[in-house]
Each structure stands twice: as structure tokens, then as C-alpha cells.
Length: 288
Ligand SMILES: Nc1ncnc2c1ncn2[C@@H]1O[C@H](COP(=O)(O)OP(=O)(O)OP(=O)(O)O)[C@@H](O)[C@H]1O
Ligand SMILES: [Mg+2]
Image (cartoon, rainbow, N blue to C red; front, side, top):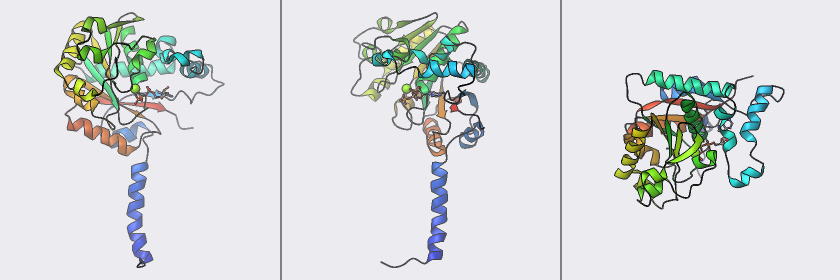
């Protein structure tokens, strides 16, 4: 093999290292989101691990959030993640109120009845943010319907310990009607359409006219419809829904999501002409 001159290797190596570094760098602060996407940050949700155990509020939040290693975990319950319901006064609840306020500010003059929530990759906090935002809206007296359109990894039913035996996929396949698919959550003003049975072709179902009709019906019955979706960087489901909703919120996890992934998600949404309302920066830790 021919030897490469060390100076040429260094010359070629540096840009590659810089490129890799850029691709690996993570979103940390609000300004990173703004730099990468140019979008508004609708709100910042703290990382619940950050609370120091000596801080009473922190302990409270952390217990609510992570008390999942108990017997209820076997039932696949995520009831304890309904922070807003359990702890109205916490710092986390205040973050949701900020998002609520910012949303009404950004939507001024524009119709905003259906909002999809997505993120670039898995586990950034879409589902938990969506459910707490729904709670926050219903506490404000709004009638809210959550539609779990993550037909691949449904979660919303777990927050309310509701059966997912039938739901959205069953409505779309005309196995049940809309009214039968609309379930009470036990919280005033908040109803839920669970995802239903796992379909073989989720994209086809979400891309159908029936999906449009479900959203139109939900919008007629509620002040706001919030739609949970899978990550846009991994599958096209959220992209397919962009023309059926009034706006889309992008969730990103501080110190987890790479700039590169967030940028891709942003580009993907733009490709589908999504009305991107802004970004929620989740799992944020204040720098010590
Ligand atoms: N602010 C936060 N602080 C700490 N942990 C969090 C926070 N938000 C979410 N999590 C945790 O991150 C994990 C993923 O949350 P969630 O299921 O809401 O993400 P998701 O984006 O909907 O995931 P998926 O792409 O799999 O649908 C959960 O274990 C949740 O408890
Ligand atoms: Mg989810």
C-alpha cells in the first residue's frame, strides 16, 4: 500500500474530524435549538433527574416521575408521569403553563385546533409532553382530545390506565365508529382515542381520508386536538399527518439529541410544508 504523506493526511483529517465533531455535537441550550433550526423555543422542561435530593420539590417531582419500579410497572402504567395533575405548583407545571401561553401567543389570529407532537428520534419525551400539555390545557377549561397516532409504539393509554384493545386503527379500518373509539380519561374535559390494534401498514392508515375525517370529527367536539406521533427522523408517519393538522411541535432532548438529528427533523417537516409552531427543549439541566 502507498504511504500517504503525513502532512496530506493531517490536511485531509482535520476537516473530517471537524465534520464528525459537528455531527456528534448535541443540543444543550435554547440557543443551540435556535441556531440549528431558527425556530422559536416554546418552552423548556427540566430534566427530572437534576433535582437535588435535598430539595423537597425535587424529591417530590422525581418520585412522581420515576416511581415506576413498583407493581404498577407490570401493568405498564405511566400514570405517575402526569406531573401536571399530581403537582400543579411544581416548576415542571410552570414550564407547561409557559408553553401553553406561548402557543396562544404564536397562534394569534391563526386557527390552531389540531397540533401534532413529534421529534427527530425515539425517547425524547413526545408522549409525556403531549399528555401533560393536554392536562395543562384542560385545567385552563379547554376541551381537549388526545389522539394517539403512534400506531407503532402506542403510549397514551398507559398514562390513564385505559385499555388499548380498540382505538384509532380500528376506527380507520371501520371496525368501530368514532364515538365508540372516544374514551373518557377520568379528567374533566379530557378525552382520548387510544392507538388501537397494531396495524401492518400504519402509514397507509394514517394517510387515508378516514384519518382526515377522524381529525375533523375530533376538532368539532373539542377546543384542541393533540396528536401523538412516532419520531419523524425514523418513520414518515408524522410527516404524512402534517397536511391534516394545523401545526406541529418538535420536541428535542437536551444533551441527548444531536444537532444533526434535529436539523434533519426540521428539514423533513419543511419538506412536507408543516406549520412548525416551535420546539420544546426537554430534559434540560441547568449548568452548575
Ligand atoms: N423531562 C424529563 N426528565 C427526565 N426524563 C424524562 C423527561 N421527559 C421524558 N423522560 C423520560 O424519557 C423517556 C421517553 O419518554 P417518552 O416515552 O415520552 O418519549 P417519546 O419521545 O414519546 O418516545 P418514543 O419515540 O419511544 O415514542 C421516558 O422514560 C420518560 O420518563
Ligand atoms: Mg411516544
